Length: 351
Ligand code: SF4
Image (tube, rainbow, N blue to C red; front, side, top):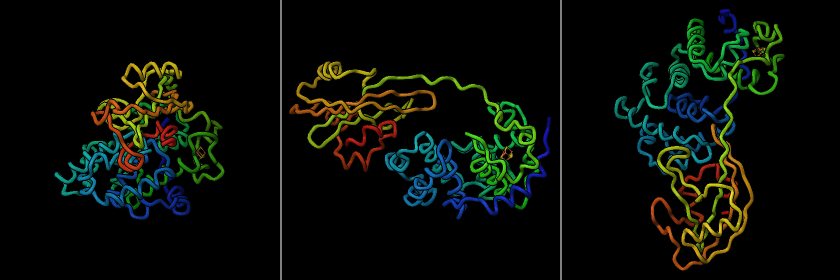
C-alpha cells in the first residue's frame, strides 16, 4: 500500500530545529566536511566518528591535501575506524576531484555518483546538505523510519524498495530545506526510532502519522532477511620481540584488512608446545614464550577467535629482518607510524 509522506515534513523539520545534535561537520557543512563525515559514518557510530573527523580534517584540511596524502598517513588517521577501503577510496576520489573539478566536489548529484566510493546515499547527502539540492539520501536509518511510518513489510534490503522510497521522498522534499529534511529523517532514526530495542514513540514528532505505531507493529519493522552466520576462524597471534623492537607483517593488498600491518599470525588455536614447534620450523631457536590470553574480533562475515603469545627472541640475528612484507619496529614507530587495525587491540596493549 503506498503512503503519502508529505504530511510528515513540517513536523519533522520543527523537531529537527530543536533536537538536532551539535556535530562538528554540521556546524560548517562544507562539501568536503559532509563527504568525509558521511564516509566515516558508514559502519561507525556518530560518537566514535567525532574525534576521528576533527583529527582528519585538521591534518588534511581540504581535498587537495587529501589527494596528496601518503597511504601510511591516511591509514594512521583511519586507524581503529575499520573498513579501510573507505579511506583508500577517499584518496582516489580526491585525486579525481582535483584533476577533473579543480579540487571542488561537483554540485551535481549525477556527477557525484560517478566518483569512487560515493554511492546514491552519499551523493544525496552531499548534494542536499552541502548544496541544498532537493535529492533524497536513503540509508538504513531512513528506510527503517519510513517503513515504520508507512507500516510497510517490504524487504528493506531489496534495491527496488530503496529506489521506490527515494522516488516517494523526492516528490515531497521541501525545496527550501532539503538538507535539513534528510538530516531530520536520519536524526529521528538515530535518536528516537532506533534500530535495536523499542523506539521512543512518545517523543516522536510524527507519532500521530505513524501507521506501525497505531497498528502496534513497530517492533516487526523493518523487514530484513535473516543474515548468514559468520564464518569462524581460529588464529594464533605472535607478539615477537627482539630487543626493543617488534616484528610486524604487512597483509596482502587484497582481501581482509588488505595492506594493513599486523602481528604475525598462524592459522589455528595453537597451544604453547605447538607454537614452540612452529617457531623452530620458522628458524627461531632461542626464545621465551608467554601466553597473552584469548580475544575475539568480529568482521562483517568472519569472526576471528584468537589466542596470543609474547615471544622474546634472544637469537643473535633475527630472521625476517627488514624483509618485506616483514619489518622490525620499535614501540614509538609502531604506535606512531604504522596502522595496526582494531582486530589486534587485545595484543597491541602489551606493546
Ligand atoms: Fe518510529 Fe515510533 Fe515514530 Fe513510528 S512513532 S516513526 S515507530 S518512533
